[in-house]
Image (cartoon, rainbow, N blue to C red; front, side, top):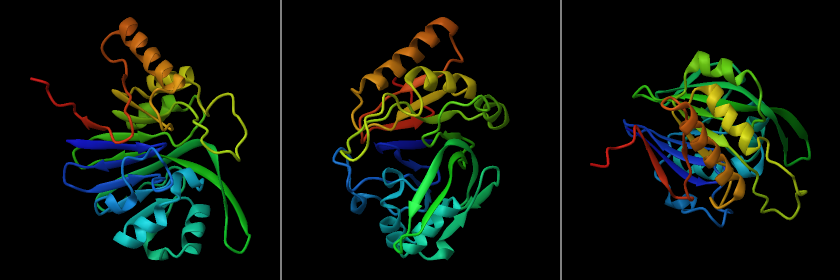
Length: 256
């Protein structure tokens, strides 16, 4: 049984049924709503970094250097991590479509309609493309990590090809940072995110990219999926909305 712990924003700790630990987009120590700090995390086997934004990868060097974790990321993020002291041998650079296997976990990056922009310590700026991820866990569970994507119609193709059961879906933008402009929407609105979940054919849609689940976008997303299920019945995605620190298990344990 795979366990998914939400750590706030887009950060998740996945524990596979064989004990392998996967950390996604770690932004923890500077997140006031994070339920733990990086020092509290178990040994991390694999880190997936979708793109170079600070709120998706800031704690990657600290964890990777502590645990010798393997990292899968794009080229510009790889250069930033090396610049920050992470040994190149720990990093697997990847791009859309190229499946790789690290720590016994198969990962296939897929298109994410987002960008990745980093700046090295010498001032060099690098841009690239964000990565979505299809994660194949040892028990057969297939996980889709949306990675701040905007809605795009090929999500239908991703669903057809990979048949993910669990999706980690960005459904809002929670601006806790004074230096960012006030955006009217996230990369996907709640309606767009709920539509994406349907196109992907998810069984469970785990909301993310927030620090507080009382965010109105998060509640709207949850309501839309529940209305979809009421209308379409079995087979519609089930929303999973957690406070930071919450744990979702797939398959869900019986309450009996």
